[in-house]
Image 1 (cartoon, rainbow, N blue to C red):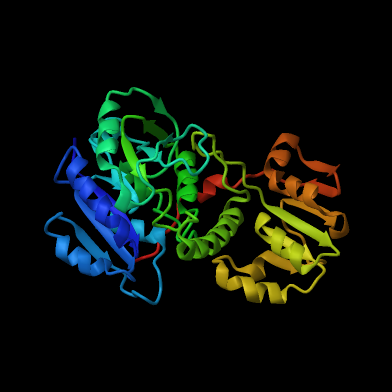
Image 2: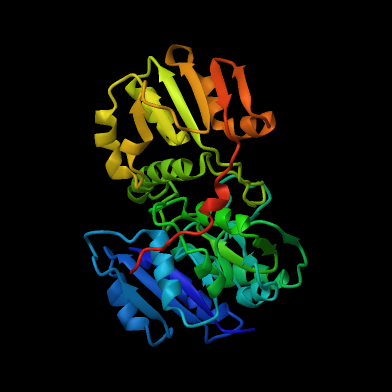
Length: 390
């Protein structure tokens, strides 16, 4: 196989890197793959350790130039590593992952143009499984990793022929194809960056391949903080996830959707305006991300002031007075007094409802008056982004 680059962001992840990095050198088919680590924060001695082992493990590391003040965020950190790579192919890898024997080779065997190949995760059974991963407990923390048992299991599955269509880290693709779509979107600051780029890849015509003989052990989001057994990281992760999810919805017009095997489902993105009578601050906060423009009859300045630091979108362009001229292709008009949980479910599925209507005109649904002037969709305009310079 060709030489590749493992790209690994680290946010005070020394505890995990000490298991992750050695696993790449021990278990990869090629022992000379490049390893690039980007240190986004260091509150645990990560840099000192990397200085000590960089020659031993033949790795390269870079440090956030604004260390301790501002984070790059995971998407931008990945892109930095990819930009620095000198191989034609790279693999996105999490610090809390442990490479199985020949994982690189078994993935590379399926790599071709317009293809993204991901390894199959083995995880301890603490999160739901829809068939997209293998659940076996080889340890909950890196210090208690059952290495010998894991190695035996991986070796016994190297001849597995199962292949599915889905995408999750670690994933491998050609560097030039990644750069053509602009890399990760930095507005997904610390979460949802993967869902965003997977949507864009699918719209750009990429095929997702998951071979089940290419195996990694995943400590289920320990590095990022999605695992609630690490309270300090988890609290920050929850805040980051809330903000990134709202950014994702603002961009795509819908929440993250995928098949049980993790292949993206991408609803159409329409130009939608909400016209809300008797609106209030709580409803404005809940509904603003779900449309292109929201026209309200309540004071919205305090919402803009509080929320603008959390988004890259200009909220003054998204929120307008109730009687402002309406220029959206599709208008949804309703009274806030008639809005509840069932109505919010309709909003969340609005793209599918509009798609199924399929025609210009007006109709009523529940408490909503829906006026469709133009059915142009915009999701394919989101494929490419202009990445920020480093």
